[in-house]
Length: 74
Image (cartoon, rainbow, N blue to C red):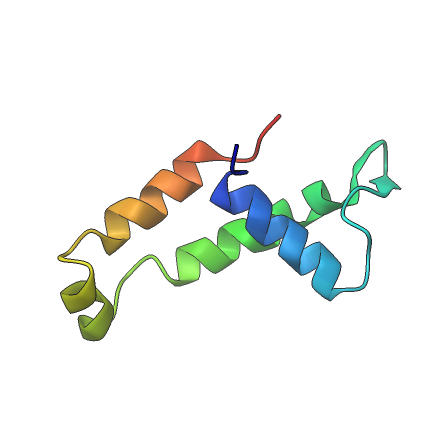
């Protein structure tokens, strides 16, 4: 099963900073500490550009909102 988008972004940010995603930090997997940054990244792209709007038939914002609502796997 594919991990939720928010979790994949958090894991990618964690990895980008050179940390193994599943290393423990304050009792949780390290990637979870990147959730606020992952959420901020999704919020930053929530409003589509004209080009994105045209390419997605207006469904971009709904897609990003769904990713935000889905949250990470628990």
